Length: 89
Image 1 (spheres, one colour):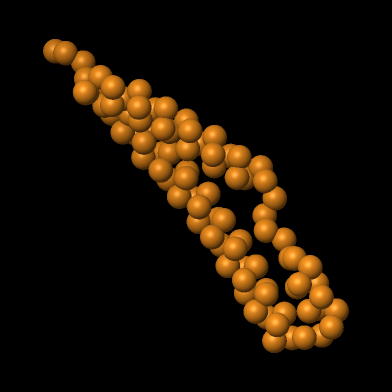
Image 2 (cartoon, rainbow, N blue to C red; image 1 turned 60 degrees about the horizontal axis):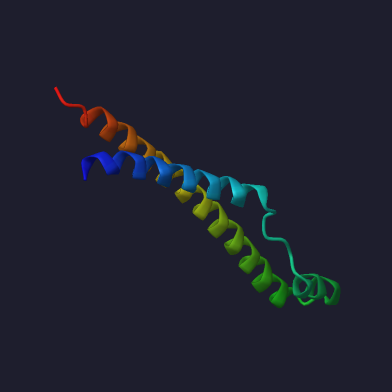
């Protein structure tokens, strides 16, 4: 079991990094047509609600990307530390 732990952690680290960089490569959430319509109509209450929703989507995206990088770092450290511990003396 110990000899499969290190490669599994390193493969997981690689998959997490690929996913994080793929999310970074895509565009951030942008204002939708409803928000543009609220701005044109001057509907400030609806505009505030939609802008808050947009900011929440942006922060969730940042949180997911940050969590992916942290998880990749943790699995990479676990993978490399298990490589060092699996050697026979």
